[in-house]
Length: 320
Image (cartoon, rainbow, N blue to C red):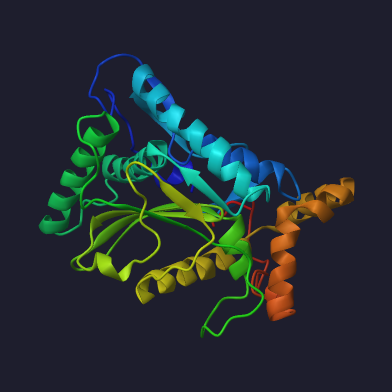
């Protein structure tokens, strides 16, 4: 995710409450996600798939919320970060108990993703039936966050955890699957002829917001409840096309990694040499180790450029 993805996303009033007060700078994917990625990386830097040759300090953000709405969303982010995200990524818990803030947080992320794609014209070519569902989802999620309705109804929020894998019977699994599962931040709006969902990948936390889902019963063990529940490692069932979508994203991430220029590769090498202890303890190396165990040299080859001749520092190409 990068600024290049949303060049025309501008708001002249609060995107949530429609108030006309001064707008605050808001993250689409919450900032605590990016702080953890930087702290747990081998280099202390971030790189996004659209611009792999550019080191960045934070995720995409824009002025879209008034002070009240920004603080409202931040209160749920704080709960999720402290009670759920940190506990799980730091290995202090495998499952947590949550209350109302969990669904509020999830809906706020899905709403932000859909709202920013909408504002940037990224979904203008959708068929009328899906555009109508998108308008309805945005309205329902907004009213739910503002306390005007008790739950999001059919515009459900589904979230699950992914982690490193050391074996798989799935055909076509890409050799960077562990790096994609654990070291990628991504957002998207995904659709086919009659369905649409939002996608927000925050490292190991994968969130889907239902916009139009004809067969929600095909999702098992992933739905977030409005008042309370448990979240963590558990058996889940997903439609096969969702898994295929994530595998394709992993392949695309491998292509992006392969576009890192010689100059940037040298910067990465120097960062490794400057702090070998950090590298050895990093989540980046942990993910790479699991890919190597599963695929051997293919784990390296898959993300290496086939040629350096046409690669420059200005090439466009996931959080690394």
